Image 1 (cartoon, rainbow, N blue to C red):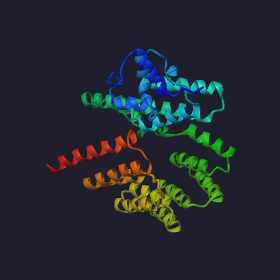
Image 2 (cartoon, rainbow, N blue to C red):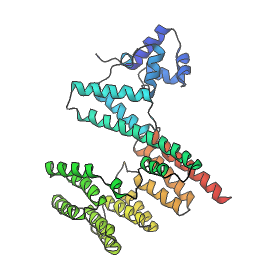
Image 3 (cartoon, helix red, strand yellow):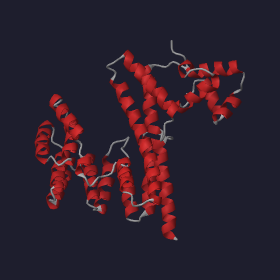
Image 4 (spheres, one colour):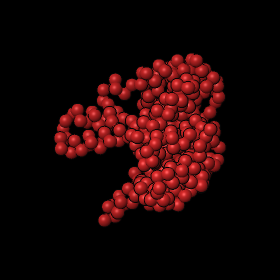
Length: 348
C-alpha cells in the first residue's frame, strides 16, 4: 500500500518531538514548506530525501513508498532541473533503478534513466576537471599533457584524427538502422556520425533512403553538410537555402539553416532564421534558437540584445513550460549575469 510522504513526515516529526519550524530550520527551508508537505499540497524536493532520512533515523524507502513510474518521473525531473546531483542522491536513485530492473529486466525507461544519471555525473565531473586543469595551465602553460587532458575533458577536437572518430557509434547505428529501417530519426542519427567521420559515400546512400521514407528540409541540409565538408562552400549554401525555399512554413528549416549560417559566420542571416523559427513554432516552443541568438549577439558585441533574448527564454520556460525553478531557469540567469558583467567591463 502506498504511503503519502507528507503523512509519514508528520508522523516521524511528532514521534521525534520537534515542531514544523524546528524541522524547517534544520533543512534550511520555511516552515510553510513543511506544512504543505504534511497537508499533501506539495512534496519534498528529491535532494532533501537523504537529509530527511538521516534526521529521522530511517531509510529513504521508509520515508515513503510511491509508484515506480512516479519515482522515475521525479528522477527525470531532477536530471533536467538540477545542475549538480549529490553523491547520496545519485547512489539512492541508481539503487532504485537497478532494483526496478531486477524486478522488470525489460524496463526500458529504467535503463534510460540509469544512463542519463551517469551522463549527468560525467558532465559534472568533466566540468570539475576543466576547472582543475585550467588552474594547472596557469602555472605550467607549456605542458602538452595538460592541454590534451583539457581538450579531453571539454570534448574538444584533437589534431590526431584518430581521437575524433566515432567508430563505435557508426557501427551501432549501422546495425540499428538495418534492424529498424523504417525509423527515420535513426537514419538521421546515423548520418550525423557518418558525416562527422567523413564517410561521405555511405552518407549519400543513407540520405537517399531517408528521402524515400519522408522528404523534408533536412535532406538538403545534410547534402549541404557533405558539400561543406568537401570544401564546396557555394554548393553547400545553395543546398541549405533550398531547404528553406522548399519548406518555408516549417520551423525546422529555419533553425537548421540558422545553425549552418552561424557555422560560416553569417550572423545577421542566422539571427533572422532563428527569429522566424520562434515565430513559426507552436507552443510550448523550443528555446534552443534563443540560446544561439544570445551567443551571436554577444559575438557581435550587442550585449543588451543578448540579455533581452535570454530574458525571453526565461519567460517562455515559465509561461509555456510551467518551469519556474531549477537548472533550466538558473542557467540563462547565470548567462545574463555573466554578460552584464562583461558589458560593464567593455563600457568602462
